[in-house]
Length: 166
Ligand SMILES: Nc1nc2c(c(=O)[nH]1)N[C@H]1C(S)=C(S)[C@@H](COP(=O)(O)O)O[C@H]1N2
Ligand SMILES: [Mo]
Image 1: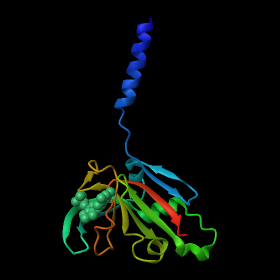
Image 2: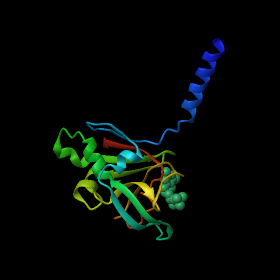
Image 3: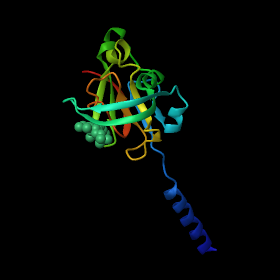
């Protein structure tokens, strides 16, 4: 009897260890709704697709090309999380930071997303080259309006955080 219980406990631990957690993307900071999203949940939102995104260095060298991609706009996620801006006059002081699993971090200003062209062109991808992004985690970020796109190409995104400059 005792042995059977131990076996059962071991089996349960084993099952838990084998169950692969799918990577999640966190949207947090100065927002009303903190969100934790899986690739499946992103797919259920308004999906944007495109072709031939070039990762270009600041010297103009093409580092690589993403043949086809699918994702959602960064702005749509920020909108859903809803930034808390108590004083609208200070909206130009807010930013959105995007951080990879290795700590690599880039930012977008509120004005870039809401007053400029990057708003609908900064994309959180769940598919690169028509495949789920497996190697580097589930999500990456591209900004198709950037000329030199390398700096804001973030692989394996883990966090999107809304903040305000001090
Ligand atoms: N998370 C993360 N993303 C990153 C980087 C990084 O170090 N960490 N480096 C950037 C730089 S400098 C380049 S050139 C490209 C390289 O992408 P690749 O390794 O897929 O060719 O990723 C960009 N995105
Ligand atoms: Mo680079």
